[in-house]
Amino acid sequence: MKKLLSLVMVCGLILVAINAMAAEKRLTFATGGTSGVYFPLGGAIAQVLTAKSNGALDVTAQASGASVENIRLIDAGEVNMAIVQNDIADAAYNGTAPFKKKFPNARAIARLYPEYLHIVASTNSNIKKMADFKGHKVSVGVRGSGNELNCRQIFKFFGLSYKNITPMFLPYGDTAEQFKDRLLDGFIFTIGTPNPAIQDITTAQEVRFIPLQDSDIDAITKQFPYLVKDSIPANTYKGQTQPVPTLSVQAILIVNKNMSDEDAYNITKTLFDNLPEIANEYDMAAEISLKQAKNGITIPFHPGAEKYFKEKGLGK
Image 1 (cartoon, rainbow, N blue to C red):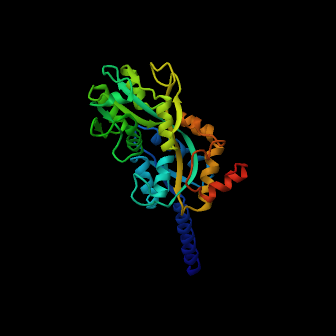
Image 2: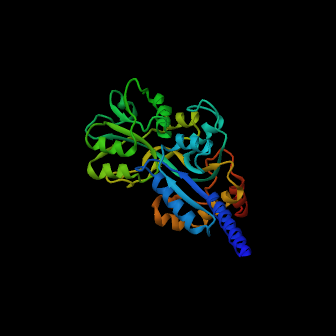
Image 3: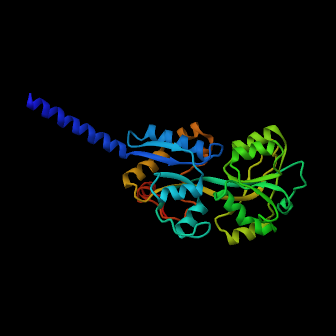
């Protein structure tokens, strides 16, 4: 009887240990607002990582305030994974604006997709170029977000500031509702395409996409090299029949530097080995490619990710 009890106790301890080991593989994934791209894309990635990693990963996506908040969550170890803009990651790692200190604990897994600067105005307004936003009510994104930082970066090139516009610090979904209700004259989103909030707006009413001139783009990218010359493809949104010259940044996947090499390797391998499955869950994932996995990333890569890229012949 004593032997039987001992055996039961040993088995119980083994089960506890196994469960503890499994719990270590449970990863929290910070994404963005529920009406943006990060949240559904992060959900699709989390679902496939969990389903296709042969039990190695259990990933749960959660909504967040996007890039700036995600950097802080990663650095503090409060989440394991996150999506951020490449320019925000670089600024955090080096302690430059909008950060007042260095946040050194983020490590890159891969570049995901480009995020285009959408500059949109009401057709009821006289706004036809960036400088025309003066005196108007404009949504610039959540205060302190990567979106809002991009607005502050480019405004000065057009003689704009928060003193000569009325900035509205709104998430994407609230922006869409207020724009449709004619409470906003315009908005600026740095986001992947197609954005559901903008799709919602363009389905309900006509809008005016404001293009950037080459000379302005050249001046901006000279000072901010993470903002690159790009264009929103034609017919991305209803009524937008021509490409829109603009700027873009890159959305990248990051993790905490203390993540095990094994977990980081499994994340990277499972991600790139199952891109079609992720795209089936969310169309934006079709823009993720191994060939471009290191594009635009200036912070250090996690060794686990580097191991996978080395196996695939993708050098520095």
